[in-house]
Image (cartoon, rainbow, N blue to C red):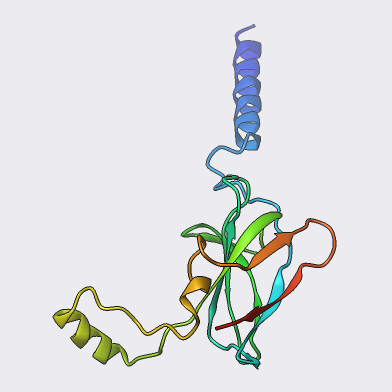
Length: 158
């Protein structure tokens, strides 16, 4: 009888360990459904290279996460969604977005550090109109759908 009690205790322990392990304890963040999003940015009738494109939730919806991408030499971008410092996923969550586009003048890092010492409130020269750089003023919008193609073209105007 004692042998059976130890055996049954061992089986109970193993079953509990398996159940707890399958419950997802400490398995990292929840990764949301994302969709492939790509596009192109045109400014002054030319592809806009090296610009940061941001998709920010149009509504206060916690399920619609911000996404970002950088344009290449052809003005084309694909988006990724930041989850936490160890997790960034390809694509964007479905939803309604305000789109921002930012491009600042490229400067030598040594010059930037020197100027920062003298002027901690320094600002970089913006190479796109200000209205596109802020989610509150940008006229650009996108609707990311879970089915179908999510390809956008944004034409910036002065």
